[in-house]
Amino acid sequence: MGSQIYFKDKDFLPFKPVTNISLEECIRQETDYALIVIDIQQRFLKSSIKETSRNAVEKNLILPNIKILKFCQEYNIPTIALQMDRFGLTLGRVSSQIEKIPQHLYLVKKEMDGFSERALEEVLNKWGASKLCLTGLYAEFCVYETARTAKRKGYKVLTASDLIFARGSSIIKEKYQYDIGADYFDDYKEMIEQIRGEL
Image (tube, rainbow, N blue to C red; front, side):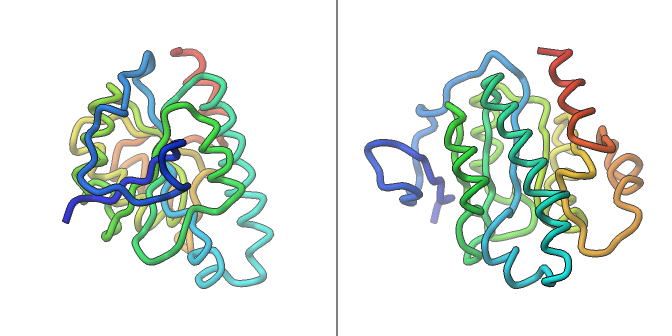
């Protein structure tokens, strides 16, 4: 079975799955950046984040992600939301911002690594993206595995401490900078400034 890609399109109900879709709907972009939002899904947020840390998630993940998505809307940076199969839809406030970006889609994955779904690389190639900004859950698992594969495939990888959420590891910055070779920023504003300077 092919990858499930969810397009927000007037011809489909919101989030209707489309399998083995043609990539013709993805248009080459003027920028070589793309944003990948990983697993910011209702079920992850409800089941695996303790009540005491929900405020931290709101302040240190959700709000910065909404800000970076507004930046992507302003600069027309294409965006993919990866969703882990059987964990529900992307959080409503995040997906409503994603849908304001002209070139966006949702891709369902079955493994931690987003590149386990061939469609991810196909879409990125169609967009002409070579620099990937990664956000989401969890910094030690799905985001890390996707970042590692992206780097191995030759993409430039960028992320920031308030765009990814860790369940407990205190060496996230070191893992991304030294293990992967990613550009890791202390906050999303620094990352935006670098990207803006290249656009």
